[in-house]
Image (cartoon, rainbow, N blue to C red; front, side, top):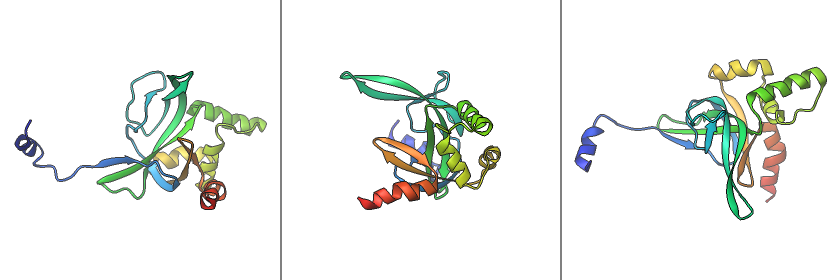
Length: 180
């Protein structure tokens, strides 16, 4: 293909959408969004990566052990949220990850907490985010799937992004950032 044939091929295209994963710290609001995120992953069970809004995935993380790089497989529940400040031409999004668990294991943890008062471990951040949005656990799925906005915050710890509610971010993370 040369430049002239390129021009002919795209003559009816005025603009394109550019997706941009947000990697910076901050408080955000977004809506559920289907995309194939910029992560190294497979679908849980080994299926090739595909676009999703919410899904259980397996993160493929390269780590150095004994002077050799190995790929660790870490299960994670993931939600893609399109930031409300996105435009048609520039779509900003975050893939909110809950590492080391699946939606099923989080659900079991919430049920055990309700029945027996056991501590929330992997589900604590998600529960706090749901609560910070004024929702109950039983309202969470309808809220997201109904296209309603969801507030969340993300901050960096090492080379990973972690996800929390706005209140936790204001009290614990933003305070530390301002002290530096």
